[in-house]
Length: 212
Image 1 (tube, rainbow, N blue to C red):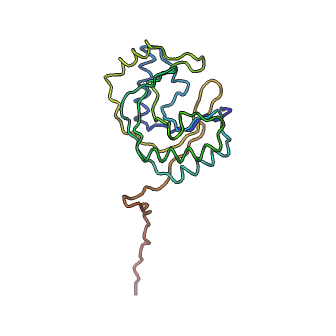
Image 2 (cartoon, helix red, strand yellow):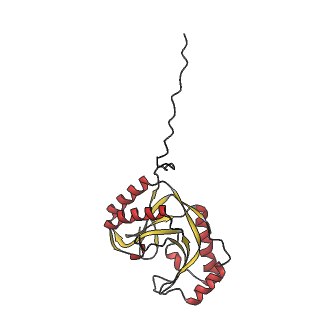
Image 3 (cartoon, rainbow, N blue to C red):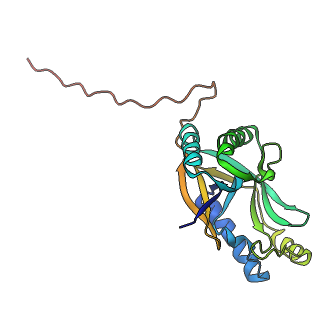
């Protein structure tokens, strides 16, 4: 059982997860790139911290999951982060709904976090699905050569997907691997275009015919 919570993510739907896992397996087979296997489940992240107060962050995510219906995000193509720790990733469209959701999550989770990652603040957040990066545990970044070769392998692919998001998930860290430790299904009711919530369907009682 992981000893400490490290982040808040959404797990991808089954089809998208299979696509991402296939990419990871190709890069491992062709180039030996295994850095992403420190978090060996397809996802994208909203909030990362050194640790969280368990009771506080669980209550925050339960609240947010209860009021949020499942929603779609759109992958918009292959991209990279440059710098000391290069990352090859699939960029996600940061549309108004996703930005508002992330902002709400940030404000709910931040009071219960210690040493948050500044890269996930609302004004800095760049949602993405990681495909390749270096060995984080041993502080070995992705080399320029590996990055170039990986991009050559990935370039022909199609990365414009629609992804269904139906959960929030807490990730834990046991010092070796990070893994999902608690998932909160999104169970809010969808809103109609006019802003009203969709009504629940009420079953009418069956009338019994009276006999004289």
